Each structure stands twice: as structure tokens, then as C-alpha cells.
Length: 181
Image (cartoon, rainbow, N blue to C red; front, side):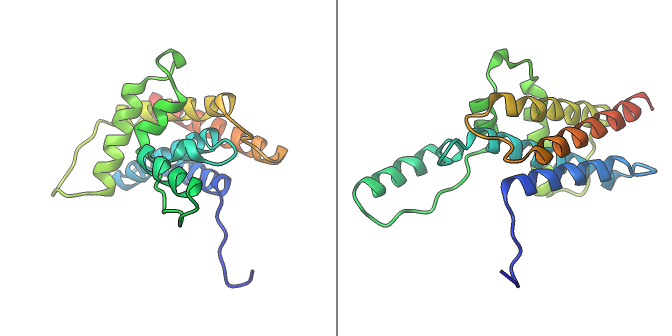
């Protein structure tokens, strides 16, 4: 399909991890590097959560009201409505329960700060460096756990698993250096 650019969930996850790694390898780590690292970590975590939740039809990633409307339309042979991805923390909570070992508070703050950065509506913003390192580290832990909680196939090919694990390990190694700096 010449003239088209193709995306899929794994390409998006892989690219988000690559962007995260590229941002945390900045020397020196500028404010912009930290901002885009946090955004990339959020994107990668959302991607891994959505892949794990998608099952065979992807219904578990939709807003609940959209699912009800879609199922009603399908059962009554009506035009199928457009659906939207549910809110990030709703998706996260569907995959990770309280006993998951993932610090939900850190993930929630990652989400809040990502929203501040994406919808930047202030003259300035200050965030603790340690928090960014901790939040990104926790998001990587959640990403690594996501395939084990998957409702379907997470990786379709062996190279995807290998690439995912290599990127996550490289990110963790760099975060350790940043945490010790």
C-alpha cells in the first residue's frame, strides 16, 4: 500500500520505548528530555496495557458506555458507532489489581503529569527529578508485567518479545545511572 503509513499496537509500543530510551540518554538531561521521557513512558505503558487487555475483539479497552452502544447496534443490525479508548487509569485498573505489586499512586501521578505536559496551560511547571525517575521505573515494571496478565496474545513473533525485553532492560539500566547521579 504505497503512499500509506502503517501503525499497529506493537509498533506504537516499540516506538514509545525507543523514544523513552532516546530521551533518557540525553547528555545533559535537559528539561525537555525529562518531559518527553515521561510522555514516552506513559505512551509505552498505555500501549502495553492495551495490548494485554485487547483479547480477541478489543472490547476491554473501550469506554464502557461505548461498548454498550456498540453491542446494542450489533445485536440490532444498526450502524456500528465509533468507539473510544477508555481513560488511562481505568485501563490500568482493569489490568492491575491492588495485589499486583505495582505502585498505583506513582502510575496515577505519571498520568497526571503527562496530562499537564500534553495540555500545558501555565507559564511554568516544576517537577521533582526523582519522581520522574521513580515513575518511569514503575511504568517499566508494569510494562514488563503486562504480558503475563494478557488476555490474549501479547507478542505475535519471537523478535517482538526479544525487542521489548531488550528495550526495557536498557531503559532500566539507564534509569539506575540517572537515579545514582
